[in-house]
Each structure stands twice: as structure tokens, then as C-alpha cells.
Amino acid sequence: MSWLDADEIVLHPQRRLDCRVVALDDLTHDIRRIRLAIESGGPFAFSAGQYASLAFKGMPPRDYSMANRPDDSVLEFHIRRMGAGSVSAHVADHLCLGDPVIAEGPFGSAYLREHHEGPILAIAGGSGLAPIKAIVESALARGKRQPIHFYFGAGDERDVYLADHFAALAARHDNFRFVPVLSAPRAATQRRTGLVHEVVAADIDALDGAKAYLAGPPAMVEAATALLLHRLGLPPEDVHADAFYTEADKAAQRAAPRL
Image (cartoon, rainbow, N blue to C red; front, side, top):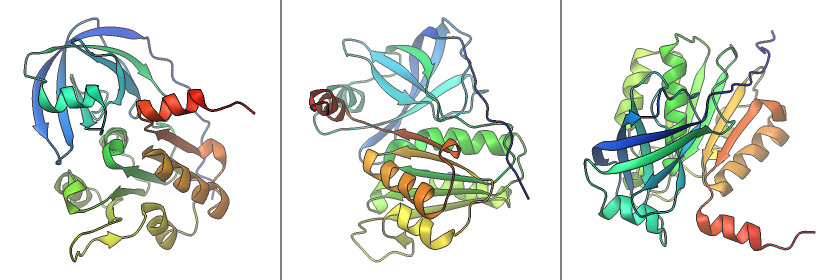
């Protein structure tokens, strides 16, 4: 049975939004959630899985994915503190309620294909959970009944977040499955262990009519993409990936010799 539908191209107006921080909380030891209220420049239309460029006061702009559904009025972002990242350090140590933030977007092509009725496989690592959260929540809110599998890769237990939230979604939706995977647990665990793409390979041997959404560290996205394309036979047009490159990654790519 073919589940495939015509692929979708969405075009949302590009906006420059004046926003203000209305909520801050720590999701893990190195990931902070920020919520922004739009004060001017809207309305802001986007598709679940897209991202925006955020400029905090005195800081250069950086790209972060929306973690909220498009129908939410408040924008949500998950920002991981990077070793030498001045912007992520500012968010972790100095950002306060009421601070102004400029958001521009939306950008990105790894968004939910809303007319697709086949199975959905979502794989995220670290703060790559943010766009996958928007995709999963949007699909379920729209009443989609196809199987939706979400594998979340983290290092240790302290790197897992929003597990209770996704477990509650799974309890309410029998077509949704959430699987956290620990690659380097420091203690005995009842969770799945190993690299997240290897756990996917152990669980799934066919992806007929599926679409895959991937977000997270480049190495994870590349390994998962190779699995989907070469071992599980998913067509390239059905793999929608968003690798989270750091500024150092981008600088290294620019400096690399072109062959």
C-alpha cells in the first residue's frame, strides 16, 4: 500500500519581529528554554520544524529552531550552552525576563509535510529535540493517525529532557512512541543504550511510505541519514534533516579547501 502524497513546498512571509523574553527555565545542565512574546512585526507564520535567527542585545545573531507549534502565540527555543559560544553563554548566564530579542525568519526546509499520511520517523540529538517537538506536537494536534516514532539520543541521564512530556503524549496517543537512547550512561539504566541510529536500525527494518525528520549534531544526522538511505532504502526526498552546526563548524567549512 502506498502512503505517499505529493511533497509540499511552503512559502511563509519573512518577518523581523521585536520580541521580549517572558519565560526562562533550565531543561538540563546545559540547555535553557526561552519563551518570547512577539511585540511587533507579526503575524509570524511558520511550519513546524523551521528555525529563526535570534539577536540578543549586544550579541551577533544565531539560528535556533522553534520548539512550539505554529499556532502557539509565544515562541519557544531550546538553547544549548556551547564551549566557546559567546551567545549561548549570554543566554545561560545573563539573559533576563523582559530582555528584548529580535527574531527573523522563518527559515529551513526540514518542516512537517502536513499532507503526508504515511509513517513518521523522527530522530533527534541534544537540543535537536526542539524542532522535532514542534513536528510531533503539530502532527498529533492535527489528529494524524499514522505511526509516529520519535527516537531521542542523549549522552547520559542528565542530558534527557521533556521525557515526561513525551511519555504523557504517548499515553494519550496510541500511534505515538517515544524512545530515549543513552550513548554514554554513567550508571545502570533501564533506558535503551548505544548510538541512536543503531537503536533505530535494531527496531525498524522497513520504512514503506515513511518520512523521516532528523535534527541535532552533524555526526548524528549524517549517521542517521546514511542508515535511512543505504540500509533502510528511504528515498532522499523523504529524509528531511537539520544538522546543528556550531559557529566553529561553519568557520571550518568556510576555511576548507575547495576541490
